[in-house]
Image 1 (cartoon, rainbow, N blue to C red):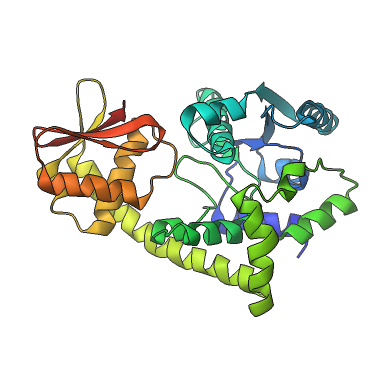
Image 2: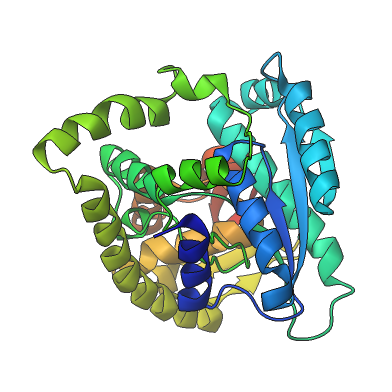
Length: 333
């Protein structure tokens, strides 16, 4: 199926867009985001939404400024409003003790959310300012494999969602990389190619360039199999997540500083699938955006059950779970 047909089907199947929405696409200038920009521009009138774009200059590659100039020209030609920003991602990653990939992803998502939050204030009820990312079907298969390698659970196997709770959507998630390249060629689009995509310094690239080709020798349809696994896991995870939300809403409270608080006696009654999700919800409300590994939650669970006086359990991004007087407080250090 052609890329534009697949995107339209994905939008319809998952009800990703409502009339009056504003879509803010994260635009790198690469094949995926350029293809999606072009397709969404063609669907703007049909679905009655307003399309905008955002470009983050990571200041890593020598030609990063050229990428920025390129997306400015593309958006100008298509009549798409563009916002650009520059951030020294390598320095940010070093300060946080994160990988460059993780820091870049976090900052892109944060910037998109901030833009959408400002736009949302002026929208009527029923309309949403939605962040949009151009992850494709191959990215989904790679994400499942990466999470398996890290020993993920059902939530991690669900990989990337078509629509997240915060409104972020991925209309390209069913589209194959080959169809994206064909679309760009057919519409005379000349995307920028990120040279780091060929570097095996990054784990995702190793999976794409080495691991998946080896698995395809065993099962030529391994990407489809991985995506089916993600869809199946997402159904189970969705049910467990809904049950966790109900529990959390009935037990949540906040301290005087606005930090989420849960009672130890309540947490002790939970089965692991709900316990783990409840902790993730609490940290999300505290502002922790990065994925929390199971090892962190296990450490907290041990402390919840021993409850030996005041104790602090470290989490990613400088966040902590502070145990004190029968409560667990979730906050940034």
